[in-house]
Image (cartoon, rainbow, N blue to C red):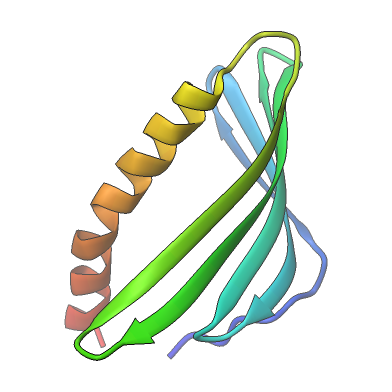
Length: 104
């Protein structure tokens, strides 16, 4: 089991040409994760946002509520782009959880 806790450290992910700076602000294991994120493309900041992921157990399933409060900067991204990105990320979640459970 992995312990999650807030240490207010910034996690930087670089994928040419994008950079994502993420700072975890709130973690309640099994209930909620909150982070602030800024994405830059070629050193131009295109979005900054506060994201909250809520986790709600529901009988034989789990409900996730993702709230992304986004500020779009310098026209480099759109709300549709962000929605598509979250969709792609959440679509990969079942396989990632299955692989994680297989390794436990």
